[in-house]
Image (cartoon, rainbow, N blue to C red; front, side, top):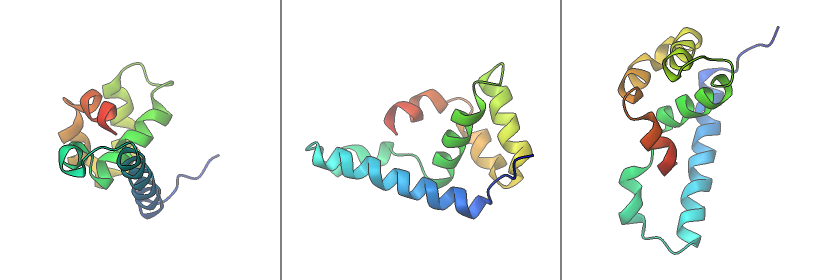
Length: 93
């Protein structure tokens, strides 16, 4: 049985991932004022990363998001806010 990482560990990993995305976009010559408002929050990034892990086994995006809530109830508010815009956020991350 696999032990799920703590939310703190997931948040640290998400922060690192966001930093990498920002750095890549800056090195690509993008103006941070033009894209920073599009970037997901740390908790949104955690949900996106978890969704990516769960999506192959889930029959729908909602099923994957429900699994995220089941594993990490503290992310419920974030998940609920992402339900309608998850595809848009994944494109900007």
